[in-house]
Amino acid sequence: MEKSFRKYSYLFLGLSILLLLFFAMDLLMGAVLLPAGDVWKALTGGAEVPDYVQAVVMNFRLPKAITALLAGMALSVSGLQMQTTFRNPLADPYVLGISSGSGFGVALFILGTSVWGFSSVLWLHNLGMALAGWIGAFVMLAIVTAASLRLRDTMSMLVMGIMVGGAVSAMVGVLQYFSEATALKTYVIWTMGSFSTINPEQLSLMVPTIILGLLLALMTMKWLNALVFGDVYAQSVGLHVKRARTVILLISGLLAGTVTAFCGPIGFIGIAVPHVSRMLFGTANHRVLMPATMLLGGVVMLMSDIISQLPGTDTVLPVNTITALLGIPVIIYIIFRNQRGF
Image 1 (cartoon, rainbow, N blue to C red):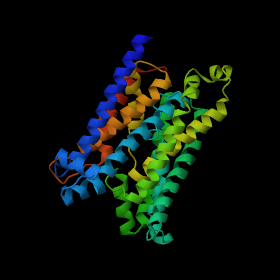
Image 2 (image 1 turned 90 degrees about the vertical axis):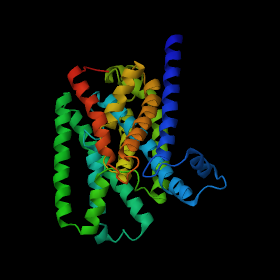
Image 3 (image 1 turned 30 degrees about the horizontal axis):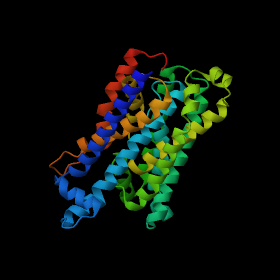
């Protein structure tokens, strides 16, 4: 036990150091490589910092780094909750269509703003995007939950998620065909997945929502530990399974829906990071896995954001292309390993 505790301590310390390192690198690197001393002065309000450094750090890179950090944590925790709740190693918001549902809600909102007249009111537009993302995520969660009662097979759930995603894409295609050019451009940029387009008003809504979702997720660790052994065991230890599963999925939908609404559909992080955490820490205890997945999710997303920037150039790749390249090998490994449980 002491050895395991020491091992976990070292791993958590290592992940924390990596998180701080990548967060700092995200502030330093970009189209222009900023001196570390100037960045520190900009963050602490020091004197004699160039105006352009102050503007770049505080108005662009710091909000982007915070967004990447929280998005990675939120999607990873959401994936962990879904994998345990559905007892499906391939479950995550993207694969099961939760992100697609959230994206469809956002598409309805963005492509209809010119008709509804919300685009001219910034706070109303930001709130509308969030609400649309949440509603779409929760509706899709309800559909997936109902389907999971019949589809116990892992591959069947995966195929269903792909089919639902395809149907949603078809409906979005119809909306795009009839939308105005300005709204269509906004939506296409959103679908690429980006942390650099978040404005202060969006950040003020996204940050507290994700932090609340993460705190609520931490409170469900005991429930997840019971559910990982099946419904019968969970009931035997006094857990109200239906109520617990509903609460967990609502929290998962809140996290995934919020990230999708503001950052676009970002896939593969939610499915890959929980599995890497399990392999790295060698445990199924969610009291260890939950904070580990949060830290690792933040590290991976910050790393993806750094890679996407192509330092020294003005080119910024869509974040979801980087997360796909990082996450797909993990998914292939999981499929070939043919897991039967956790």
